Image 1 (tube, rainbow, N blue to C red):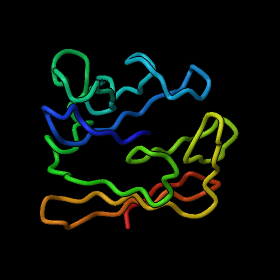
Image 2 (image 1 turned 120 degrees about the horizontal axis):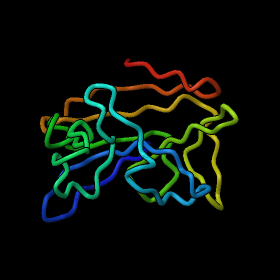
Image 3 (image 1 turned 180 degrees about the vertical axis):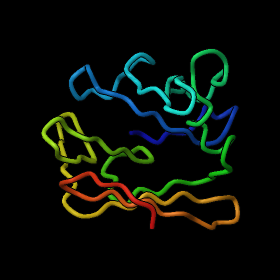
Image 4 (image 1 turned 60 degrees about the vertical axis):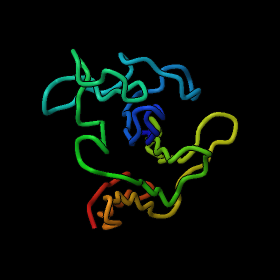
Amino acid sequence: MKFLNCQSSIGGLYYNVYSDTQGGTGHFEKEDTLLDPLNNKYLYSNQCKEDTIGDKSKHVLLTKEYGISKVDVSCNTTSTIGQISFGYDGKIYSQLGKNIKEITTPCEIKLFNEKDKFTTIMVEPKTGYIHKI
C-alpha cells in the first residue's frame, strides 16, 4: 500500500494497493493492483487523472472522496508520503528494494482532514493486524 500526491494541477492525495510482481521495484501496472471489494474495480490511480472512469475505483482518491488533506505514516523510511508492504514471509516492511526495512514496532497511519482533525489506523508488526484507534 502506497500513499501518493496527485498531479500538481489536480492536487490532493491518493493511495494504491498492489502486488509488486516486478520484485521490489515499486513499479506496477493497474493490473497489479487489488480489486475494491465494494465495486470490483481496481484500487489504482495514475496521479488522480481520469480516475473515476471505467475500471478504476474512486475510493483511492483520498482528498476528492473523503476530504483527507494529509497522511502521516509513523514508520515511513522513504522520501514518499509513506508505504507499507506485506511480505510473502509474513513480515511487514516500510521500504523494499536495495534498503529493505522491516517494521518491528506498531506503525500509525494518521489521516487528517482540512481542519487538522485526524483518525488513526494502527498496523501491528509481525502479524500485520490493522485496527482503528
